[in-house]
Image 1 (cartoon, rainbow, N blue to C red):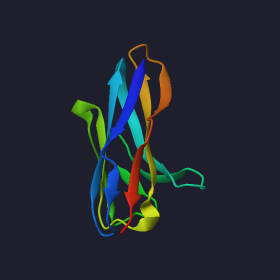
Image 2: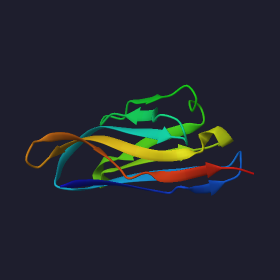
Image 3: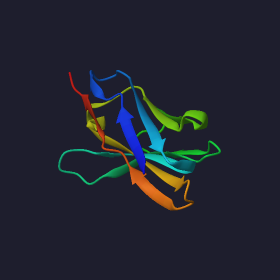
Length: 120
């Protein structure tokens, strides 16, 4: 069994910063691409950023230049540094990962989400 657990969410004023973490645990052989998504109230879940096992990154236009995705492969952990936050960044943030288990079964896992609220 594999679990993804997000942390680091909270409330911040516009212009502030937060750092989210996504820690994977369980019977992991390897983790390939990892991603962040977010879902605002009344909206569909949207892509935020992705990072491959080799460190290649890609961002949604709405966060490019403000958010930075990174990962520590030794710790099976991914991060999202969010700077210059705007009220429209308010959402539940979810991590997602392509995990190969020790059984060699490949599965996409989701975390439970962490709330980010940007408000004055």
